Amino acid sequence: MSPLCTSEQEMEKRMDKYIFTLKSAGLHGIKKVRYAGDLTSVLLTDACSVQDYCNTRMNNDGARLVLSMFTKPQVPEDDDNVLENYLETQTSVIQEDKPLCGDGFNAAFCMGTYCIGFASNAFWSKLQYQINVSSSGETERHVWYCVSLPEHYDNAEFQEWIEQRLPLDLQTSELSPEKKTISLRPDHGKDKLMEHARNLMNSPYVESVLTSLPFSSFTKTYINKKSDFAHGLIDVVLFWEEKGYCMRVKTTGRNIRETIAIAEILSKRYGRGK
Image 1 (cartoon, rainbow, N blue to C red):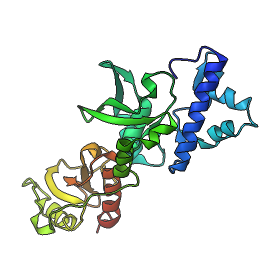
Image 2 (image 1 turned 90 degrees about the vertical axis):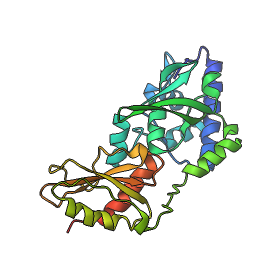
Image 3 (image 1 turned 180 degrees about the vertical axis):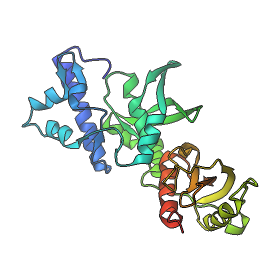
Image 4 (image 1 turned 180 degrees about the horizontal axis):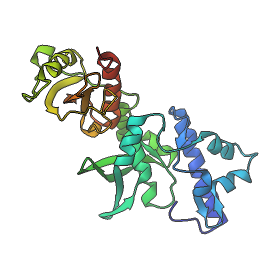
């Protein structure tokens, strides 16, 4: 946490703000807050961590709230797609045109949610931030949110942003199945891919098939983990075929979180093989 507190009084004020923010988060459906490591790694001063602060105030409701909402790591380890994207995506926060490390923003971006942070100074007391997100060899600028004060939940623009992302609201294609396009190279296995692609066109979350991909005979899952989830693209592998025929599918996903959810739906419906 930067900058660190310079006095006991400043530390108390900072934690009071954080605790009130967590209470507001709870009222808005947030049950857990994810951290990169233990609370011992979140320093308030050189000599006191958030864990130390809570340990000395176990009779305090606020301290118990911090401990009860704590969880790690920053993304769920049992979700392979989210974890893979988190590890392969780098995010920085822009401050006066200079990039700052933004691992918390990275996790929030990959999961399609907002950050909860400490109002440690004027910059980190804002609600809206410019972030650079690098993934799949490309870097894009996004606007993202970090709640650090209870009143942030009253911001109308933030409320609209939340409604667009939470709960998950998957978009459906405006095209009928027969209007969707399938583009495949004249390679070996095109007939197998075409048959499967025509089935995929029946999904309301599929827009088109963009192209065939090189064989992926060693892949044993329907969705290739290297898919470009951030741009709504998934690489479908016919893993039950010896050659592992593969094609790139354009979905209605608008971000990593939505595309991963669509990938899971398609996998359950169409990824069972023969």
